[in-house]
Image (cartoon, rainbow, N blue to C red; front, side):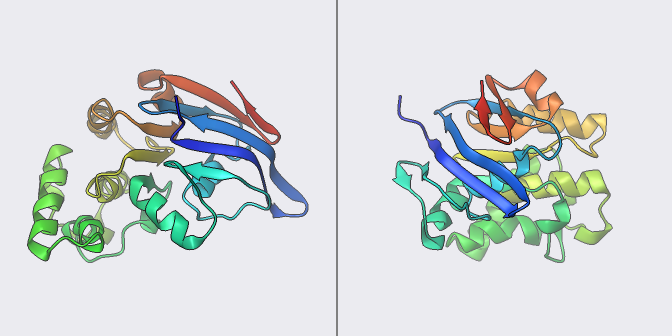
Length: 213
């Protein structure tokens, strides 16, 4: 089976003294819900950011959706097809209202204002937070912001959902809403113990020197 995502001998360092990956190899196959295990600082978030081109490796072969990705233009397509939900929701929410934020992605993909609003409202309703639409983004609680950030990505209908510590700061009701959505998605990559227990079909252990099954 051809992998959707493949890292081959990828190396990355934030500074010469802070090497994160050296010769990283990992494959992600269609219809996997992949859980990532590793201690703090091992590079779980860095892996997700490399996958969508937010970080540039020192040495690399990164294949995504059948193509080697090198340039910023290459990764533009990846960011559309692999939707990343950041660990900090404030990095993802920047419009006056939740509806504006959720509609921004579909608008950016070329949908009309009316169609983008329709998609945004449908996606909010699917997650059970349709009443968030008119709320002021900065007045949301931390957990509410996490849910709103998730909807901004889901509204773009990505092929793969990338979740960075998805349940941090969520109450039990919000976690259940998230779990209900994740059960409907065929392709998810995430780290976080609760995701692993509830959803992962395969887990990988990430270290500074590679991936161990």
